Length: 115
Length: 113
Image (cartoon, rainbow over the protein chains, first blue to last red):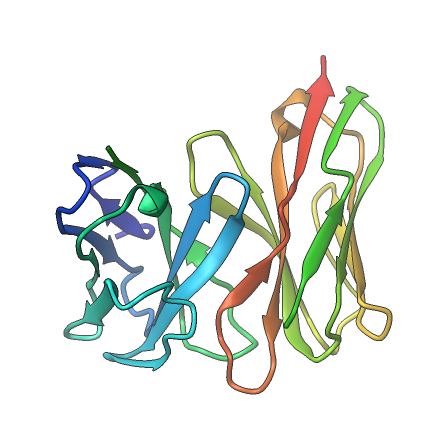
């Protein structure tokens, strides 16, 4: 595809439910990143993948958050037992490879609202 | 822990003016610095990437500079247009194998027609 795509674009869920957010990176990009953008907090790094492995999970805020990537392409971010503070826009980015030389290209995001 | 600060938080100027957005970071051990724009309800669009060994990058009316030793970057926008209205974000990529970007909170820019 032409760019990074994310689905759904919007998700409203009740507190305590699990949600899955999906990211399709740019074709051929081996590195994939998840970020969260919430009011007052700015953009926070959550996790990144190089291929299917996740060398850096340092930004995941709690053990309710997990992510996987299969086939070196699509990634899913799962939030279990959602809380109201999880409400945010979740952004995915990809780059040709990991490392300092490569730009990260962002998707349009998934707006998650926990009621 | 790396911290990125952007000044000003908001800026409103008449069309046609040249303007400068500022970004500072606390840890100079970075791989690169990237400037983005974000339009309301949209994702981020990459504007310029400056490697740690570079001093500046230019793209059209945009020029970004990097002074790594002092922990500063500026984004210069020449001959501003209403279409430049957006939030501009600065982000740094740390060294040492950490690959996620650390973002500032952005400068909300309005160009008045």
